[in-house]
Length: 318
Image (tube, rainbow, N blue to C red; front, side, top):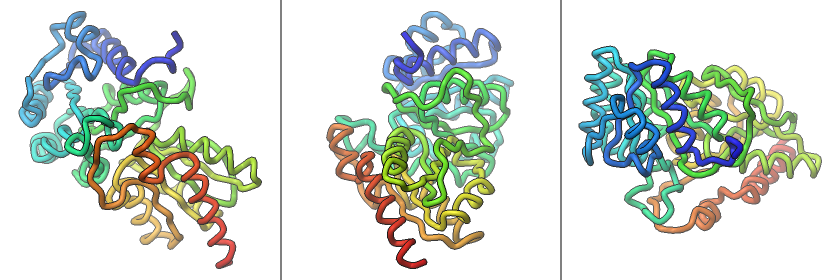
């Protein structure tokens, strides 16, 4: 089976296992969700000495991770994004961020992806609230190749980090040669008519939209953002300066996540109209991912339409 045919959580567990084999200081912490995360067999059984099940107490798990990091360990602690970023936020802020501990927090099933778990398990503000913790790096991989490279970077980098992790199968964007660099946006398509910025789960849909628009003659500069913090503002501003038209798309709240960040940069450095696609002042709900993406205007067709409208408005104002 090719790597890109595997679930993201399978690759998370396998890569974490490889990291443990290479460095016994790497640990896997779970809050009684090892089966859901994919680490039950790969780490819990095969590498039990490096596995800690903290039970259903997510905030305490972050505190335990901070203590382990204080003793030189490299803990990766995973749970649903709603628990990792919302329930355990004080511990992430104080015990990890303020203390400067080398803890890797993994928020699984971000945004709309919990589907049938519904609104209680959908948290749309994790990218936003985690990026305001001083010193906290914030990542969101779009496929398994980026995930694997990102995890390797995280294990070698001595920084508090939050990473989103979609658990299912993600469409292939990169290949075996991909190397994650948190200081660089990744240009997936080139164009001078519109700048489209996406992150994580939404990048494959954005890529599909960019290709459809290219077939219509609209040149899209598609910038994939694997790192919300740090953020490659220079590449973005160069693109926005050329196109004078920006659309952002994310599986989260536009007020504080990628869309909010882009608007901050534009307001401070280069005023540019920005159309933000994502969740807007809404709680989650039970539904299939297809229905939820359609409701919130996040399908490739919605992205394509939004880009057409934004480019059309720019042309009228020119």
